[in-house]
Image (cartoon, rainbow over all chains, first blue to last red; front, side, top):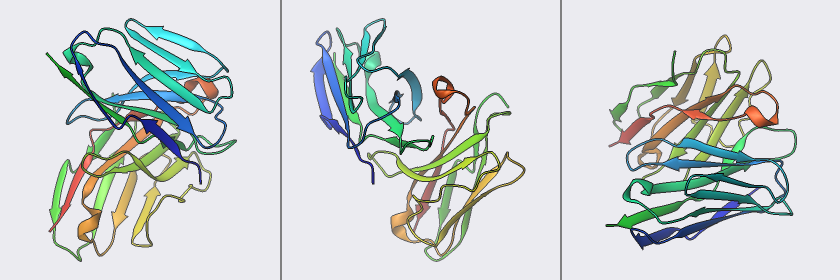
Length: 112
Length: 116
């Protein structure tokens, strides 16, 4: 079945450093979503990308969808302690379905 | 309601007992999802309901797990003869299931299940 892998699994950064997490799908995706889960919380939607090569920005966060629509990345510039949490990508588990398969997640820790 | 509501928030049960977890999605959302998250792990897909279509049960780990959705709204996830490995947080999400740009999943706070 479809697999969605993320690297790295964990990342510790000093406050102010940049952070990037990478998402790779075993199949082509019609769209990809990103979610953030704070410690002890539930996943919260961040953004959806649909077009090949699409780049979207939300303040210090930059999201990119690969040309082949099989990979994506999330880059955070100048991390802050509020960025702590686990970042998940998610994509439809097959054509014509909206069953979303989540990536393995990247847990970010920001050291003040 | 304003958000996705799940109950109970915490459930402690003994091995071998049956448990029922409830999810009340956002009003008007036609799609409903159940995921399982073990401690420190990712989200494991369990089951997906879309309107009146047959649910996608491909993620249910064993025949001890079942789910239903009544009237296109409230859903119940049932685990029979619970095992210790069933201990996890069970997350429910709903989405409006519109055009491809509108399938944002809104999650509930989850039901934490502990099997002793």
